Image 1 (tube, rainbow, N blue to C red):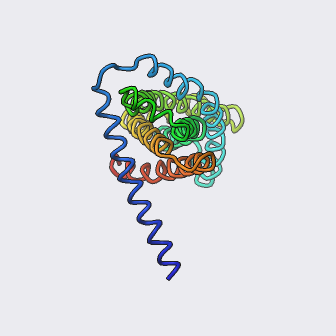
Image 2: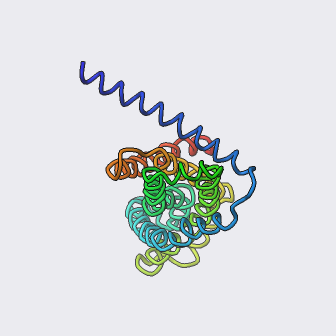
Image 3: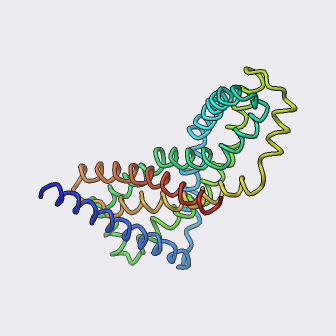
Length: 255
């Protein structure tokens, strides 16, 4: 009985969180049309989410591209198909690894900080103080972050794609000895605009999703410092797993 009770409680919590995140996202979206538009906050959060995440995203993309090239070459050489290495690496990065790894790195670096900051504001009653001053907390705290995530995550993804392909090129051409012309030609032959745009569309969704989840968990945090830590952990786990789940769903829709 305790097992069923525990599973039922987890399922109900899951449903409650899903509904809460969706409503929270919708409120944040509607607040976009409320005046004033917080341009300075928007730029500030673009810098925090985007500019300050470029290094960790770049390193992740570079070594992911290099490892992918090694592993793909190891598989292709068994069938004499190593000439298509450039195309396979580029497809893997633009369709899947680029948007997914970028979003997860942003969750780890920026998403956790968003939850912790909002959670601290909640337990110190700063959010209540905003309401007392007739300021919409969601419009002030969440909406600028939401749009910053929607814009910067696709830009980071595009950068990650280029850096990852460059890493694959270094391994493929300079280490494994694939001809430069063949590597580039197969990449041009196999990668289409749809492949690139599908990854960008995914990253737009991931940007909105991760800000909504991390913002929701922080905004409604409770239980003091321990509660903020728990909310941050839940936000990172839910966002990361959710990104992988939605990546599968979006892939089935696009392809």
